[in-house]
Image (cartoon, rainbow, N blue to C red):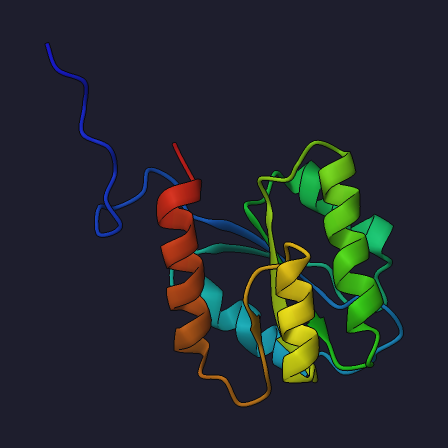
Length: 147
């Protein structure tokens, strides 16, 4: 008997992609994060929104407790070069380097490139269509999310 075929990107998943959307730091503007959370939910993903003023430690702990596949950070405060790497570091230290850390906000292109070189996923700027986020996460999950 041959083994079952591996899932293809177009094959339906057995479970939805689980995403934690978070607003780290002192940034008090979460309209964009809520729009993104709704778009991901509408695309069939399971979304947990942590709310405002989360520390990297709170975000990493919630991601682990909720057993998410993806952490999406929304950062408008300018602290992206500190917050993205810290969340990634905490997840890696907890043995959860399988969780994609991605997100967006007001992030200069050079900083986006530097963060991606540090292992952070693709980052998105203001005005990015939510369909691009959905496509990116779907494509990533096709090769990283099982069961």
